[in-house]
Structures are given as C-alpha cells and as structure tokens.
Length: 196
Image 1: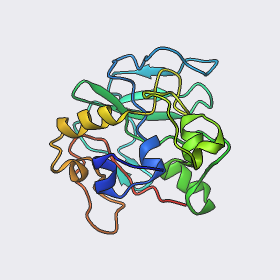
Image 2: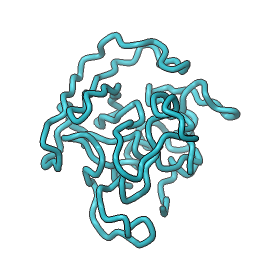
Image 3: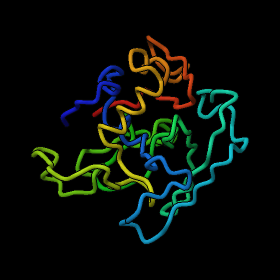
Image 4: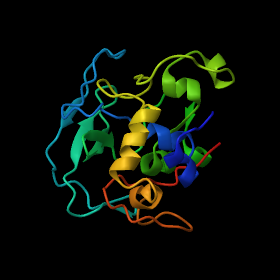
C-alpha cells in the first residue's frame, strides 16, 4: 500500500489506522450518499456517557463523543468531531474476507479493530492489493453505511485542524504505546493496531 499521508506516516501506522478512521464526510448525520450496504448505520451526535476505559485504554474526558452503530453486525463505535469533520474514534472491527485480528487473537480485534488488506478496505478486487487502484475517494469500501474511507484531502484537513506539526502526538492515545505516547487532545485515540 502506498502511503502519502503525512499523518499516518508520522505515526508509523498501517492498515488498521486507515480503517479506524472512516469519515462521515463532515456531516453531523454521518450521511455521505450512496451505500453498498443493504442497511443504514445509526449515528447519534450526542455525547453519551460510554465507558471511560475500553480494553485498558482510557477515553479523553471532556470530549462530546457521538455513537455509530453498524447495522451490518450491530457493533457500536465512538465518533468524534474535529473541526467540521466527524471521524470514528475506534478502529473498525467488521469482519470481511482478507481481514484479521493482530496475532490471530480475538481480543486484539476487540481492542484494536481488524486489520485489512487494501482491496478489502476499498471493497475492490484483490488484484488491487498489488496493482494501482485508479478509483476516486471518498469511497465507502468496508466502512459502515453513510461513512467512507477518507481521502488524502480529508486527512490533510484533519492534520491542519490539530496543528499538522504535532498532529501525530495530539491524536495518539495516552496509553498502549511502547514509546512516544500521545496526548489525545481531541479524543481521536489512535492505537498501535499492528501489521501483518
């Protein structure tokens, strides 16, 4: 996978980092148009009181988290609005072919979300794991209905909204890293999800 994203490159993240950040396109309703799912995922913009600590990783206090429930498997995820964009604050854990749990452990999927090959991420033919895909972003791919894989421009907007010089530190979780723990200033809570 070619990565021209300065945010992800600065964190050394891999596939799950990209997927964990399905974006609603800046809409407060999570809608971005067409969906290849037969259902619409429910989104609530209200900051409900969810767990203060999920799988040993604390959530940032004082953040108005939203909640997304994926209608395909009924899993719920926190969302966070940064600037005008609404992002998933938890990595996606929707099982498809060519996705797996880090180290083959189900607990890793619960904590970090699933890891995906590029083609699985984008919902395209597996030949694109090794060949250049010329489609356009935003693209729904494996994201829940009404959400999509963010474009490079959307990542750029995110890093500008949090000060691009220090965006990696400001978006990383406050625990879970062996070194260079983040400050999680915006509740985005990037976790070291692993690789394969």
